[in-house]
Amino acid sequence: MSNPSDPGYPSASPAVPAAPARDPREAVHAVRTEIAKVVVGQEGTLSGLMVALLVRGHVLLEGVPGVAKTLLVKTLAQAVSLDFKRVQFTPDLMPSDVTGQLVLDTDGGGRTFKFRQGPVFTNLLLADEINRTPPKTQAALLEAMEERQVTAEGEARMLPEPFVVVATQNPIEQEGTYPLPEAQLDRFLFKLTVGYPTYEQEVEVLARHDRGMDPHDLVAAGVRPVASAADLEAARLQVDAVEVHDPVLQYVVALCRATRESPSVELGASPRGAAALLHAAKAWAWLAGKTFVTPDEVKAVARPALRHRMLVRPELELEGVTTDGILENLLASVPAPR
Picture: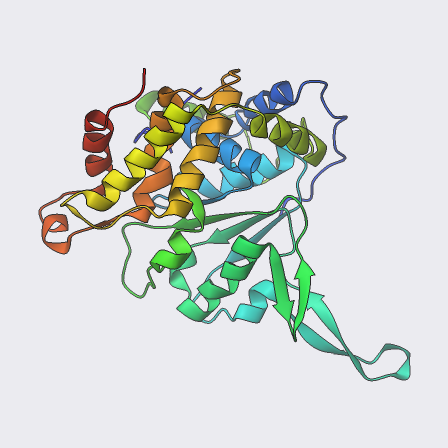
């Protein structure tokens, strides 16, 4: 199983769902095999996305264009038989374009208003280039991500279950963008860095294209549903049952408090970040077949779970200090229970 913090890793209508697997873990692992039919590499990113599905968390993918971010999410939705919608976030996108709006209904001769659902009413929402839309539209996702509902004209409308947002952003082109505020970043379970493939992986990508593979036609590529929402729910129940002993709980708290006390950091991880780290570690342990969490699982998910919840002091950021570097030092210095 690949570590989602590894630096080198980074709307199809679902087909008829496969019958629920007897063992939810087998179904989850089978998803990786299906995705590998069209996506080469990116094992760490995929592992992070699977953890997010297991704990109902949202993910921020950061990477340059063309490294299969969209393809990975689209294929994941197909393999797990989830409803999938993609929204291209642009400067002129309005909040109602995401959440939905009241429209005049003249059917039957009457003149009443009805709510037309926006693309947020789905299982897996891809918010492409989320930092290219103004804060007002970005904030439209806040209620959906946190409360899993949309409020329009005073009426709350629940979103489908499961509901996961995967947002992408380009770390290179910053002109004309609107960086996500800390309050919204804190709603993401993980921030995953999607990197370039290795030399061998890129050769394989080109070989598949040469053989006629169309990444936009997942059915022709042989991707089929091997898991379902029922499998995910069964898996979540097993993840919830993974035990966390007090020394590991204390270790999670110690790590998060260390991010706040570090002289290199202006803002450290919040208690919400500590809870996210705990849930992610439980899912990571479950994927590995364990019934309890050890410090190793906490360390494996610490960087993707905490890197976006920290602000490096501006003067140190100019010198090249990064949150990943700070976390690396903290993981080496904060004592782990034995």
